[in-house]
Length: 295
Ligand code: GUN
Image: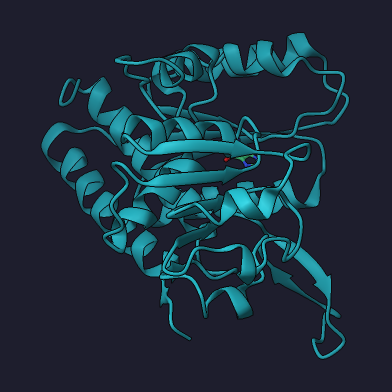
């Protein structure tokens, strides 16, 4: 192993500890308890698990957690009513609508119903638009890509002037990650399923963010020696040596890549814990903003 292992669990734990302390301070000094409302629609098992973890962490950090679990066939109007209810609830500083939504619901309208000052996921079209422009300040940026940047900074990799390659162009990770890197003055290339000569492009990158959802897709031979590699993928692959018959791997062939990269995130224990940590931080910041403590 030549690469520095980027310990997302430890970085996330340290962020969460700070959030816990600040939440406590907000409570004792200003009488404000930061609150997060979760909205889960349908029975997607992964979504249920994610929402459960987010609620649990909210409580563990001493914040107020409230949530609804709505049937998969809920009408758009009913869902909008629920979101507007949380929008008007002063105990709620953040509203998280877990994605994906069932296909009969219009995602843009639903996400647009979250007041931008409670949009702790950073998915409201106005926050997305501000992130996509120069010299605009979104109130929140999406949690997973924000976590990727914190991890890059955690090992001292210089973003300014670096060549960064983002694999994947999703609204949740790839696109916002590219904008965050660009705003930090990296030279950014976004690659996707139609990109030609992918290995040649990845080979130029000082920073690689892989978010394509293909197990062990990025090979060690594609990496520039010393590159910082952030693996957002969480993929289950068969593993007969495990009780469950499977194990989790990222989008990067970690075992080989760690011999070439300068720093790399493991899966699990890399980006995964950061998503929740950034959500907790966004919820705290929202409460601080509501209390007039920050802009
Ligand atoms: N689905 C996958 N990732 C996310 C996320 O970060 N937030 C929400 N709301 N849904 C998701």
